[in-house]
Image (tube, rainbow over all chains, first blue to last red; front, side, top):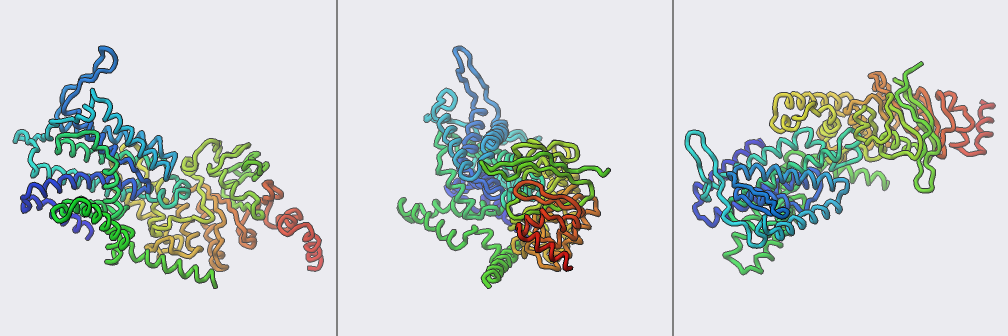
Length: 348
Length: 270
């Protein structure tokens, strides 16, 4: 049942470029799609382990820079006459390297910061993103600083027997983003339904008990951070090769906030949540732009967010699932009944 | 001589200036059911926390199956098969009973080798077989503990007594060689307690050594092979239930100085 719905949604998304020809809307869909991939990766941390990373855009940006630099090449003086020279590689290598290096950064941040939790973890991640942004801004020899990296080549894929295909058009990029999003969704889904995912849920709900049945906290959380960061890096790489120009603004804090909004409004801890939240808050500005002035757009954006969270505090997907009586909804209702009965007994 | 599974040697725990445990020595033999009792604040839960790595003792050592547990993290100790339950937060409240037990099966789920993660994500045969085995085992444990009818309810929605049972099922899922139960029958009524005593004996008969902390004296007396009595962080008595029942130091610890004479009189008149 659930799988059929997922496949129908995928089929619908796949059909969009067939009937939607407006390049402006297609562009909005592509960038939204890229951010949805980022939001899905954030959801793995926030929704399934309960750790809020407010520097998530760092992994996205690192992915973007790594991928861009790999495919553009660079010549960086390190000390005196010593230079590190890198000749351009094909963009697809940049895409893979982006995943690996972002994942590695996720490992470092995880190792360093999972000994602290809650607010401390949030602060460590914010600081990490800020440091990375400052490096991108000031290491001009490598990143061109505020002058931006330009002319980033489009991703090229080799088709066996058919030669090469340069993914230059919006039509191509849409399918590329959709493919990466679908693969990420599948990976995250498999992960959270495996015993690794159960370990994450256990830690989120009752860490002491989880530890007592043999779950290794640091290992489990670091694993989630690595995979989350790797997927965010993939999204960053797609962004770099689609927009074809990146500057340190890619690390803007507001982008992390956008991802958090997508996850929380859609429903954290639900696989489809970031997709639903992402479609709404990714496309809302696009639809508001022609009908109201800029100030009113942001006010409306805020109002929509507040209304959603007020009506559906757990997020759209879990709340709708509960309304439709799917899955765990029944249990939750019974839980509240049992609790109120227990309180009644205690008062009696 | 019976094989010693767990031995506590000269363990001391201080919280700042407060001495929670001053000098604790006792051991548990393989296949025994031992109870650790004492008035509130005697240091029973603290002792559990030391044994399972949640607290580091200021002095002394804990040996489990010949290995010194010093410096080991709680999850590493769990990996050795020394599993505990908790007094209050004994379940994962937002998961179903069945999922609770599945989380408890974590250790069984770990595939040997470095590629376990890739296998799990790609759903390769070994991971699929392991997942299937875990689900079968979880269903079996839920049935064994007698919560089949509640399997799909959220653990947080169960009564305290039932949550205790889920806690035990969880602990059993982690494949213990030795089980530490922290006040397992608190919140249970008399008949539930009676059933639970049977359950503990069943677990022991499966080859699991049991150490429990409990306040319910009739339960402790009926289930234990041996009792260790703790007061003000030191052991004041140790022995089989019948000896402990008559031990003046124990009576004094529980009922106060004056009670000794009363108890003696009762004994004389009885």
